[in-house]
Image (cartoon, rainbow, N blue to C red):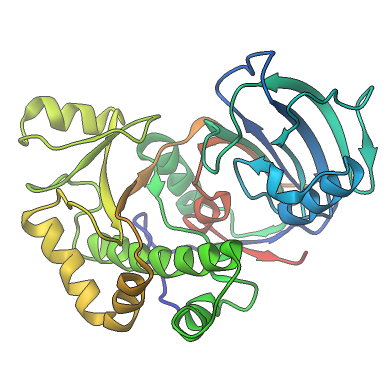
Length: 339
């Protein structure tokens, strides 16, 4: 039941191989704040390879003799990559292990105390370094698409990772959520897949209608670098803020709650929801709560270096938490993941 995304910068002609070698995909999680240095939670900066975040948590729980439920994380990081991410361990009144632990597939790089548990999405951004191999047709159209991404951002689709290895999480969610008692993590994953599918459908529709780079009357806006939303009348000042990438239009992550969208943006969502009644009914039964997500993602510290002799392309970019590097790649290149 997957739906093909629509991309705003024209047909993609370049192609490449992705994750063919160790170290081709690196990502570092940046908190955006410093741990307090005291408190009941021990923050760990962990480098890992060959482990998913959930597998890493199981390893840390075993090596620290801790219940996995007492370990917090901010983002889920790719298994087939070299990643650095933060975890929090609830250790009230306990001293951490001496030194920085190194386990199977991971190494603790830094540790510090903090007053609160790490929650999903609490980091500021992810710093990526990605190398693509066997690049074909990296011509002027691909370069223009990269320049557009750098200057205007990219469509903030949820990546294919959100929908499972076999891209069947939506189907599984519709089968499992109404009929089974699930673990909290499983239920959360399936609800996220349904909401992500609806969001992607809405975003694709806005691009198809030509509303990708055009704020509309009735839009809800999100301030860059935050989750703060607001409504406002369209005027020259607001358009200038939009062009300067200070704000983005938003779309709904389906759920109950006051929806501030109105006019055409609300109508676009309503049409998508009417086509996906089985999904919206399932989410209503599960009590999902309404949230908003930016339709456009903005890239910081973006650079690329093409080596024609080796047919390789090196990209570096900082993306806000919750945004997908694989989605950015899809805007200009067909990257075949061989991991």
